Length: 462
Image 1 (tube, helix red, strand yellow):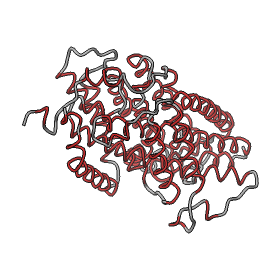
Image 2 (image 1 turned 180 degrees about the horizontal axis):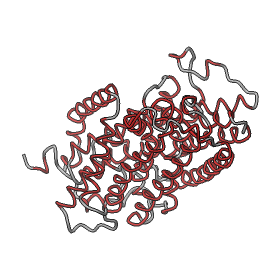
Image 3 (image 1 turned 30 degrees about the horizontal axis):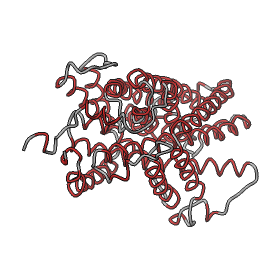
Image 4 (image 1 turned 45 degrees about the vertical axis):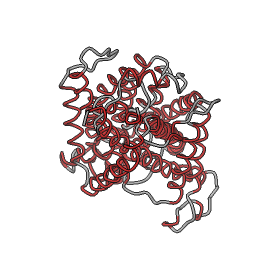
């Protein structure tokens, strides 16, 4: 069977770019994209996962875990920057794979991204609910237990988690420009809160708390990197915004690389200070930063941190939900999902119907399901996407060496090779049950592809 008619048929880059100019509004600058990345990267990782990872995986050496995660992400970010500037379209890794490796690999990675973003949104919404309820308790308001827990936990619905997902969906449906403004304000707030934490905590650092530095050994450092990798998926969400960037060839590399570098430095600083003011073994709590500040008597800073956590998780929800709907939009435009997913609202020029419907489903999941151990499942999906994109850039350099590339990945071919090796190493550090769940999800995706997507593919119809 010819390549263009088989499972590996590829989209033409030129045709894809021409089609992309007909849909979404280009309204985001390089600064907007950088703030979008920071909005996604600084959130659950810094406010929640740092404590769990330090207490159960890496100890004070969690700073090294962030370095290892950042190295894997750094290689991947350079690869993403090349593809995002060369193929500035919605869909992130899905689109990059479609124009290089072909339809079936693209479908697999798109199906992977659907899982990644949906679970990330639901998980962060539940975490947001916990911090929000803590703030309400601080001003004397307590909601009934039936409205703060799902049925499996003895309640009716986690109302705050349900409500925040609906509000995020409405905001995204109205317009990405309004969303980016809201995200920028939230990013400024939570960066200020992190500054308050560092200012209040540094005088209380006790070097004795850093001993032993690596209590779980190097395997613990890598296990910590596999867990906190959840924190780094934000720059993948930046690449989904390529079709709405004003000058994607210039702005996409700026947004992806700048947000990653800034956030890595913040993560390392917060981790070093956090494990310096409290013994690592005490940090396995839902709000480790606020908890540690309370232990050293900084109650005002602890309250400010809770406010920052709510703001930080809100911006993560904005960006994760944004990425989810744009992947749906790209896959639908290619015929692999029903056409309703790619309908653009005539006034707002956003996929409003898809955004609201997706938001409702995730809101229901966040409101009624007790979601446990999903961070690792999100991570394996992200790492798999990074590996696929790295393979794609290697292939495209060989297959189309003369293709215009506004940003070129340096140190080729070693950068994508290092990305593949480092991401593969982190995947291997995850628990076996996580990998099996991922395999089952991928198997379901293959069934859906042959049952629906393959027959409705726009390339096949053409």
